[in-house]
Length: 141
Length: 141
Image (cartoon, rainbow over all chains, first blue to last red; front, side, top):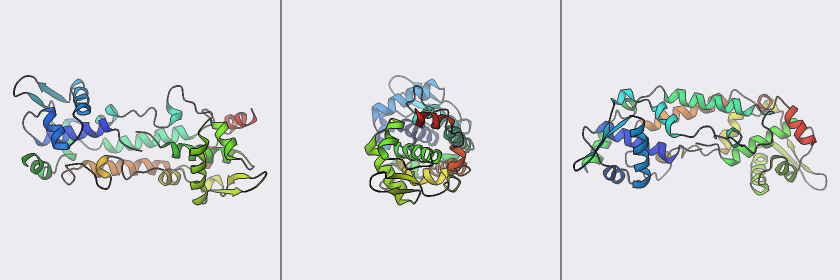
């Protein structure tokens, strides 16, 4: 059980932008976090489409938060990037599970996923990016 | 975000054994659920090592529950089969995340996973295998 790479990258991008008060490029973010530039570019597109970041094009351009960190919910971000409707094979459309209907597992797992997300709903980007010392040091380095 | 194949198979195996009052073979379980026999055999070994099922060897042998369904917690099974300490890259040993220490995300995710498991702790195998009609029909067919 793992958070998807895209959710991971989305959260790291938002946290980094929350600690900076300037435009950052995708290249810069990929380098700072030592992650794939191609995957990150897709994540950035999604973050922009969702209205969480702004893009400034051209020389000296880059991306920045389009909202205050306190306005971006961690639960919302995870809901947007995770595919939760195939959490177990039996939840997916066209499931090959042979006991669907006889099974009380699915509602139990759905409830557990709701509890997972409800916990994350208690945090905003401002909460999880609160300790900026490490990030600042990294960005200065 | 997905439950691992092995957790999925473990739960299906336990649910099927809970509906039957007899020995079943790994071959039979693999056929009924249309799942990989090899993966299922590994899961069955793990279930046996954990004390949840008994194996009877030889002709006419097979596996059966070693406890009452009400004694097997769904949360316990998931904890035993899932690898949760690498839920995001930053949680794993030797993580390549560059902002560990500056990050308030990890404790938030840990709390969310605990909420997920705490919800599953409210169910036993007896709860999730309660509606036996579908399984019985499947096994009869």
